[in-house]
Image 1 (tube, one colour):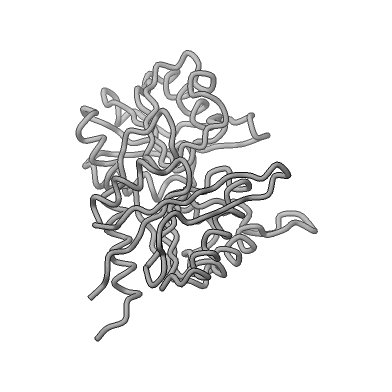
Image 2: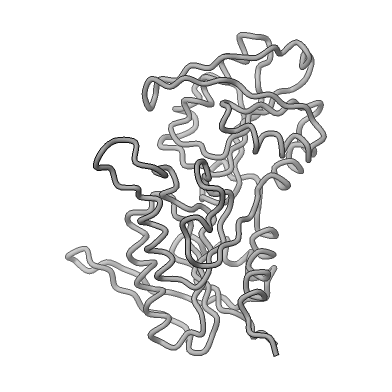
Length: 302
């Protein structure tokens, strides 16, 4: 019989930890974390982790200041006698650089996978940006379970948008957009994108005549600069299909949404994988289920 795990959030993830704890029965632990004057990290578990299944919770948006404390915490938990150390990272960073585009480049997705695989026993995340990798198993050597945001996204659309048409801002979004549309019982289409720079994007519409009178909902997995979504929204508006909603899984916006979307009359909604003012779609239940499944698969059978 499995004992209750101890769920330890890194600073900023206490609210998500409380929600997951309520759904899994996990005890919430505490980690004292601060910087020394020279910038090095001080960590102390303010809970007993000996013999326990320890789950560290930290989304890895803007990861460079998070990864060392996270790895130190995993190592300390083992040194203190933890039975296993899992990682729940609702957003998984460093998936963008999945090949060497120019001579001499680091393939950081593989480097990062080696770091996390060496520090943890298992991983749960939400919709990683798998472009050229068929699955996380291609680069991670630990068991990994992916939570899909599409069901929760489709449920939100059904509850909030009448006669929707789901729109993807580029061809890379096709697979995810199609899944959301099928679950929401709505049609979908995607735009074609050309990018001249990080903030210079142009899009092209397909034939939208079949969707006249419907309410377009822009959906994408990641919102960062937002320029692809802005270009898509303006293109749709010019064609008479002005979108009122834009949904992203991971809200990584580098500025306020007001600055990014300006005069566009859209409501921006995101899942809670990254704390952001636009969070409106909770993935607590799906994360809790994935954690329980992972722990069950990892536990010894008697």
